[in-house]
Amino acid sequence: MADELRRRWRNWSGEQRCRPLLIQRPRTREGLIAAVLAATARGRSVKVAGSGHSFSGAALTDGAMIDAGLLDRVLDQDAAGLVKVEAGITLGALNRRLDRRGLALESLGDIDRQTIAGAISTATHGTGARVPNLSSQVEAVELVAADGSLVALDAGTDGDGLRAARVALGALGAIYSVTLRTVTNFRID
Image 1: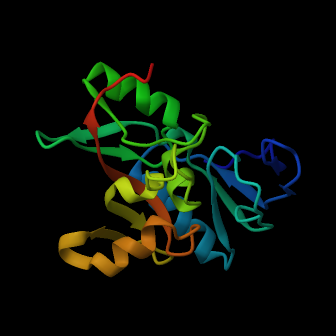
Image 2: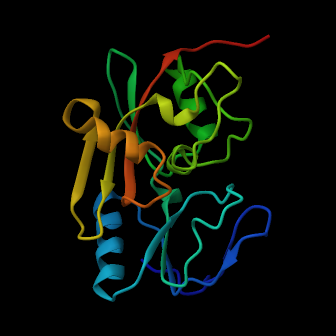
């Protein structure tokens, strides 16, 4: 699971760099849980990196880094337009998949290479002064806590927890999935 060859990480601009002890790339929820448990069992800090589009050092670590990029599936869609996706899906891939289903996100930033978890965790802003940031479209989050437990947060069961998880910078755990509110797809001319 660990990528022994690549132990250097940098963000898109090269301004933020680190040398994690190991970088893991899980493909499943169980793989994410195992990655978190393996790191914490060794007493290592765990940071999850999205696609590296943040200017901040939030993802930097000399411990264990989890690259969520292979957690990139659409898991579910309901009749009300709620879509559940894995944390590592990029906004571009999500937009294309939503468009094929006749759906869209209400608001996006100007970069579509961010992962959904990275974009919400860093409060990626919307497309205008009157449109809330991307995290405002989050209806539920599933994350893996340091002890390996899966924590499900939604407005019905833990509204405060959901609000905290929407822009947590990874502090509450490793996000596995996000459920988003969507709208009917549209075009801006």
